[in-house]
Amino acid sequence: MIPVDDPERRARLVLSSIGEPGDPRLLSLVAEIGPVAVLEALREQSAYGELRDSLAERLATCRPGDVLAGAARRGIRFVVPGDPEWPESLADLASVPLLHQRGGVPLGLWVRGPLRLDEVAGGVAVVGSRSATGYGGRVAGDLGAALADSGRAVISGAAFGIDQSAHRGALAVRGPTVAVLACGADRAYPLAHAQLLALIAEEGLVVSEAAPGCAPTRVRFLARNRLIAALARGTVVVEAAARSGALNTANWADSLGRSVMGVPGPVTSAASQGVHHLIRARNALLVTGPADVLEAVSSAGENTVDQFSGPTHPRDALSIEHRQVLDAVPVGRPATVQQVARAAGTSIRSATQALEVLRGAELVAEVGDRWRLTPARE
Image (cartoon, rainbow, N blue to C red; front, side, top):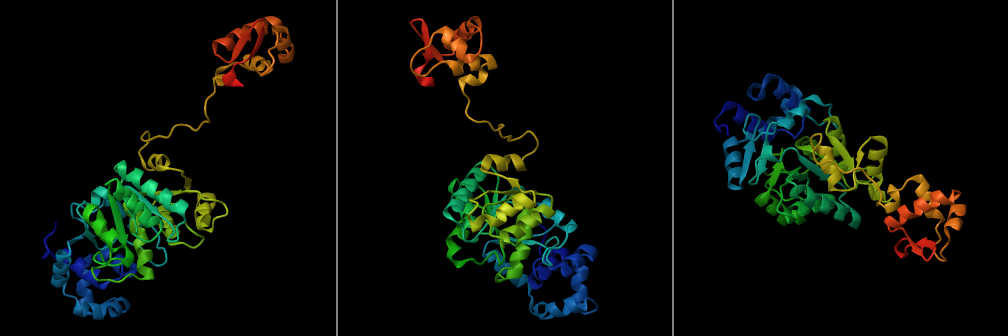
């Protein structure tokens, strides 16, 4: 990791502490001229009037050494581009349009937990409604468990409903899971999930673009969603109403060229209207279980799902002529070969040959000089 006294790391730390997550004004400047030059200009009040004015008060009171020391006491590290664990997938955020005036590659990420950030990138985001139904919660939990058990990190936002079910599913199998927050990585939001977040921090990762101590705001949630999508190889929306933050995450995933998947729900359920719209109008892939998701996010030829087919039946291997004779054999009272041939519309010779084949397949049985279906085929 780059030393704290490295000028670029220090500049990124200060800008991360005073700026808003996903603010395109700040992030585009950093991408253009670098964090050190941006910070110097803000301090000298030589440029960027509107941005400078909005950050002036925070800049005047920012103490980067104190921020970093406080984070370290809470087990939080600051990871920036160039660090060994910085995920390359986040670079894709530089080339996609803004959504809700948020976007860009983050200055750095505040990370709490034992896993490496680059090793969990490429996992699967499982997101959805905070007001999840029992059906949605079960599906999200099953997905979380199966994906984590396969080695894929389950990435979500630690919110009520679908998010918490996905995280808990992953934790239940001791698999990797990542909670990306809209507040500081040292805060529990929602407060009721303090224990869940503590467990994720022990076994997985808690990640935030916002500096420690920051409170969640609506705009920060919108900025957070792009990170969930960018860290993941694909995003699954389990349940989402017509207006849902999960749809914002799906939009980011689509812009980034990641797989967007939707789990269908009952057509009468308001909780699934947004998902159905994604599938119908936005070409999201319909998935019904972990196997479908793993196939979508894997390389070609890996984790392929068997071609769908109904249950097999011995008659499936029969020729059309033999099926015709089989259909003519009665269920109840046995029939003679002549009666079977007449009912099948074929010759007695053909009927006799067919009946011998059907007997070998245990589909018919001979009773004296007559024929009937076997009891198992009735």
